[in-house]
Image 1 (cartoon, rainbow, N blue to C red):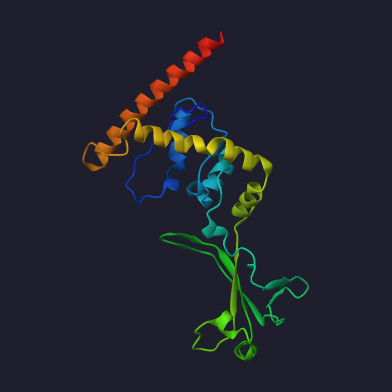
Image 2 (image 1 turned 90 degrees about the vertical axis):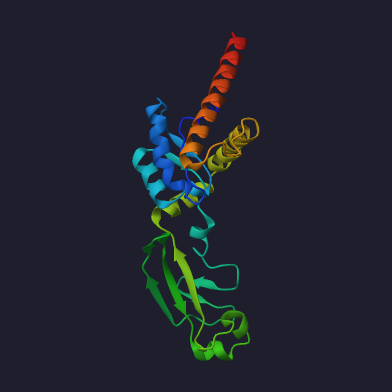
Length: 231
């Protein structure tokens, strides 16, 4: 949907399908409709690695927050563990330094990509005698030392995370994002899209396309009336 609230691309999927994988298709549909796409505003579903890289390749700015699943663990939590730059290691709340640091490569699984991480291991002897043993290790039957993992963000996610902190990102998301949800509400409440009138996904596609054609016509007429009123 463009800022004038006219829908320019549409994908109808089953309920469990991830929204993010259809960003490229939606952009291409919009471009075929004559829209020059310079920026995309969306929820966290659209900030995946593939979409960010596609946006960079096309020169399209993706205004979408990174999913917390990706950023969680990208730095030590507020739990007393601190990174000591000079020693290139972690220090626990009791002042002990990690014994080893292991780099674990990122991997691709059926349900997505897992970022690489650094795993810091503390000495078992010190951990098992420590007064914080239960808090750090829980019910650890092996009595090994504490292992602390820090996720390493990919460069494309790191840059997006920095972009999220900018004033432009915050203002743009606040000013435009709500329009998408408002359009969804309009099609459901005023045009019956909240309930399927036909069976099968094919039937839902027909209903969705017809609904959005009507919604677009009404919006175009409204914009034309507003334009005429200005003259």
